[in-house]
Length: 379
Image 1 (cartoon, rainbow, N blue to C red):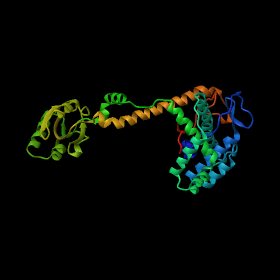
Image 2 (image 1 turned 90 degrees about the vertical axis):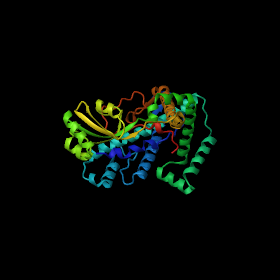
Image 3 (image 1 turned 30 degrees about the vertical axis):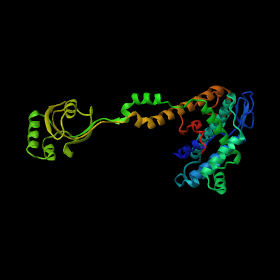
Image 4 (image 1 turned 120 degrees about the horizontal axis):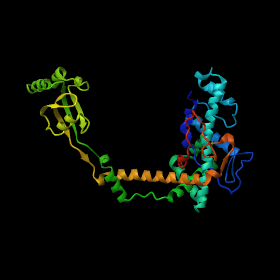
């Protein structure tokens, strides 16, 4: 079954939304799903964000089964939803549906845990670097986004109703976005003219096209047959008729010998050399090649092109900027993992890749991915 795959695209929905407290031990007390350097991620918080995901799932995929936070371990409601909303699964055994619901819950809970944990990590790293984000800055960013994305207060309220988010949730999202933006600003992502020029010189072929030629060819087994084919062409017979009579080339025999948009190095070496040195509109051959004897005519020459550095600069700058930003994002994620992974302990049933000592299952059918790299979007 593909039940789990229907909600995998929702990973990027999550954004970071929890504050950082002080330091402490590594145990996970009752009522919490994880401990990050003494900061507890409560079961209540986890269940809230699972609820937000369930609401988002329902809004984006109406009619699809919805995972409910308090449904495990029996997944009674999920099984009932599947049978009701996916008629073709109505007769599937409860044990099979329970297993699928369990795997779906695990994949979604991993996404929730990822965004809750990395929220601590990024805020903690920001604190270590003395990065400060004020409520006024967060509110300004939130107000700007609201004015751009929603035309009325009612429309924004409808968004909250659909996603299950509270205003506090949205405010936290924007706070972490501001924190992450300031972490990124610590990394130099400026692209210099010298870098653009170096990239251009190293990748010149990407900014132009090689000369290409359109050909008509006849390939024969013997030189005598090739000579006869050439004679027939010179006497005015059509390429279609001559190719049909003489050619043994399976690729072009039924198309009148046509080979279009040929670039150097694509054909038999002998044909390649001759074709790219021959003038247009002249029957040439026989040429002895690897597969027999060729008679050919160049019907069109398309000259090579090459963009100048000035013409290619905008494209190169975009490429290098994206590379620099990706490198900065990876650096932030790797630094956070280095600083906090060993201080992040999770309750066994919520364990995932951001938890100390986690070992991935030997086999998995969920195909889920974490959303750390996508958690800085403001939506």
